[in-house]
Length: 56
Image 1: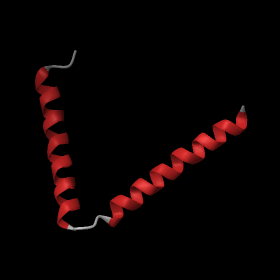
Image 2: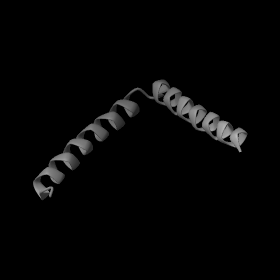
Image 3: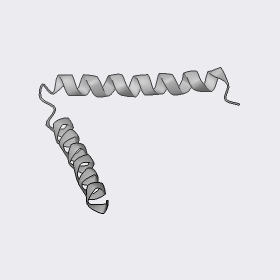
């Protein structure tokens, strides 16, 4: 069983990493790398959906 200390450590690390990413995104004014990442992710999802439709 996982103790509450381990859960709190994981939550804290994730919070610090998330806040730093948000700060970096906002400090660069226009996060082109993030928008490129989102576009690639959307493309992967749509191609998977199209492939699944062709199978059936």
